[in-house]
Image: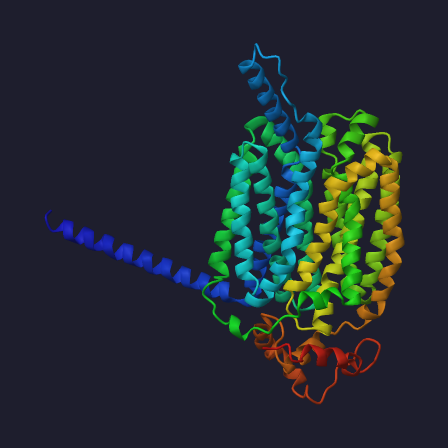
Amino acid sequence: MESEGPTESTGLAKSAAVKLSEMGERTKQLGTAMQDPTRQRRIILVIVCVALLLDNMLYMVIVPIIPEYLANLESEQEHAYEATHVNSSGKFKSNRDNLDVQIGVLFASKAILQLLVNPLSGTFIDRVGYDIPLLIGLTVMFLSTVIFAFAENYGTLFVARSLQGLGSAFADTSGIAMIADKYTEESERSRALGIALAFISFGSLVAPPFGGVLYQFAGKRVPFIVLACVCLVDGFLLLTVIKPFSNRTRENMPVGTPIYRLMIDPYIAVVAGALTVCNIPLAFLEPTIANWMTSTMHASESEVGMTWLPAFFPHVLGVYITVKLAAKYPNLQWFYGALGMVIIGASSCVVPACKTFGQLMIPLCGICFGIALVDTALLPTLAFLVDVRYVSVYGSVYAIADISYSVAYAMGPIVAGQIVHNLGFVQLNLGMGLVNVLYAPMLLLLRYVCQMKPSYSERNVLLEEGPQGLYDTIKMEEKKSKKKGFSSAGNCVPIDENGLDAFREHGSYSEESSGPEYS
């Protein structure tokens, strides 16, 4: 019996050693799998999509919560004043008349700060890469969400909202730029950016009902704590997979084109203007449509809360259709954007004519469908313009895209209410519709740019000039085995779909992009 003790303990030790060895082997296999560029790209896409989902959920989750919460705070202060000044003849100075203004400023503060920080964040991203700014953005968004959860006065809520704008300026820009950099082939890039846009749409449209239901049944803190936990998990995944601090090759990065040079590029300016104009209806209707529905169609609170949720499905449909069409007819990206702007314009004009909630769903779905067409067509076009005209570093160009969105959403909560008050809800919608329809022909300026899109093989040959994007070096190594058929690439000139010499057509652009902007 005494000899069984050591034997049993030896067996347990061997068993534990075998299990540890198996765990070590699995961890090693997982680490090797993580290093596979294709799998890493997919994981990065998931990380970025979750970050974009969080940002847009936090942006919209306060819509059903904050107005009622601030009104309740005002009532509590009024009751507290009356209880402590029973015999006083003085009256409590109520801020109810200014409550709408306070809410408008609070909602707009995120976009305003994002607008101010984006030029700096875009330059910072171009200098240090995409992963560290994404981590900074997620960290700031986490702090913002926690502050929202525990804030008990207007000043703290304002700080939390402004912090969210700071986090978004880093997370959104670096996330979209990282996708553009990782997915270098045009159809893959359109598909990946389309997936990201679907997450943005889902976050914006599902957040009001999500926040409203949790606020009603669990209180103000719960929705924000849930979002903070998701943000924490996403940040941990970023640290685990990308390891932003383990890689010290940033001194060899190409120097990105300064943001002011990109801003004065006529093609990029046209795209940025389209992104701003197409988002104006959504940005201006979000703060005004609830009051209009209540006063004209006597809509219930549940109908007001569900206003935008059905529009998620046509938005995803628009993304899907545009990605498919762009893969088949890549030279018509400008047309998809112009068509989207016309659909947005027509839908905006129809909104005031709706008499019931069911009728209202149709033009709102049209607006979101049109926005999907514009965004999905033009966001990859920005990356392409940088590829063929400048150095393939995307932080600044997507900072410009973020600025375009921020302009619309900064004006929305402040300007829209004034327009409705002075001119009326009908005139607001007709004006927004007219602006979209009139801007659509501007995208004709992009029709020749889109025809210059390099083929997949042309990009490979261009990479012989030296890697431009942050991850192009890795991509070039990946594709070496596939390029055996082009072993005489130095003697072969790629021919585009029109039968023209691609290098002759794009020579000036490739020369510009391989110029002195490399460090």
